[in-house]
Image (cartoon, rainbow, N blue to C red; front, top):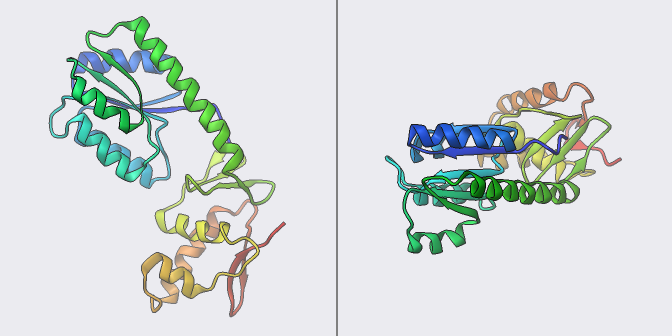
Length: 235
């Protein structure tokens, strides 16, 4: 898995500020995604999370149309409690600044933007992000075979250095199997986990399982045990 790719979501409603911030963010971080207000920022964050991708950092304005920055942060934290943020604002509001301390905020700077100060904050934030990613990679890794590694905390599967894109249901199947390596999981257990319905059609279940197995075709590691269930064999 590639360790040095850092992703940032920039949420800023002012076009000029968004352009400036995006430029400087791209000089430090490898992947920068922008959104023009809080509602779109939250929607982008949610869609990426559903696709199995996360942002290492969200840089956001506070005062925005549709959904303000603080409310957006609270909603994002409800989806991903470990998410980190940097706040940028056109005005100084001590009450909101104090409140933001509880929001895993790594930095706070005011408009008009002081470039030197901003670059110091962003560089420091990246250092912290990379340090935590390194620590997480060590503790959060299930090496399945020579090609595939699964990261259960982030629900991500990698084949060599490439992310394997899985649907939500495919990810749920894999997560159950990966957290029970060496043990057989029955079809009924899968049905309860995915649909909360033990009577869900076998055809529906097998369709999801087949899609998952098709995506790990380089070295299929899921064993089918007739009449018993499925498992990943312990190496």
